[in-house]
Length: 309
Image 1 (cartoon, rainbow, N blue to C red):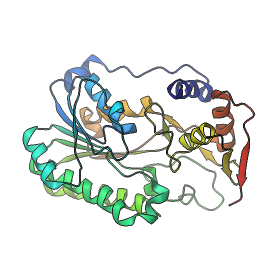
Image 2: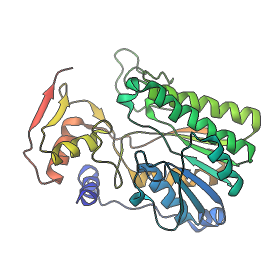
Image 3: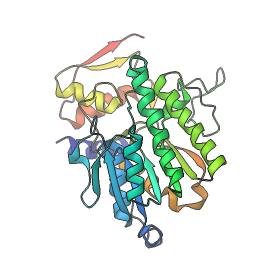
């Protein structure tokens, strides 16, 4: 039911039937035979990146510690291993066994709002764990390291604007100024990855996705992604919580618009050693999102709970 709803939401919000990305023969030819590691492959975005890498013809080794992911998310046709990226010895053994061409690093503790309360855990997982993967990649001469960072590196969404300026999409030229441990850990590893490139020559591609939704999203997580939060509240019969007047604008990205771009990144020479904000640029108000989700789930007149900020 939830997967049907998410597909329906694409049609409602965009006003058109979703058209999946189709890889070209040239892309498949470039990808064929490449051995790749996908971390966080039992999670939301990671499971889809693993699927698209498989569809490109890559040999995919998928790892996850299952602290937030589910084995049911892992696509068929990949090698799945339960591993913790913080375990340096385990990572070294993995890289010794498989000669990876590319690494797609998506494993993370992604509850941004809670990161203030689990600071040590946040940094051990999102920063130290990432460094362990990168160290192994450097030692074993991985060609390209693809890292999924976060739009959280920019901090408050309007702080990049001059006083009185109209809201606009964030660009790669905007200055990161993270305000919470989650965003700080992501930006710190971005900088470490750049330093590793300068010192050791390992290629990187950094993506900063925002407000991604779709199948395999954990709808029972009450702390991240407003789409999931609203669905969770409807499932549990609770009113949809809207902060302020609900006119805040957000752009929402369907997972199959995002994952194929991440998967093919190492194949695109012009993408190497670059940073990309990735996601939709058409904004919708939180009020409209609440209405569309309620309608898609058959709850057109679902109650709202407004909280003043």
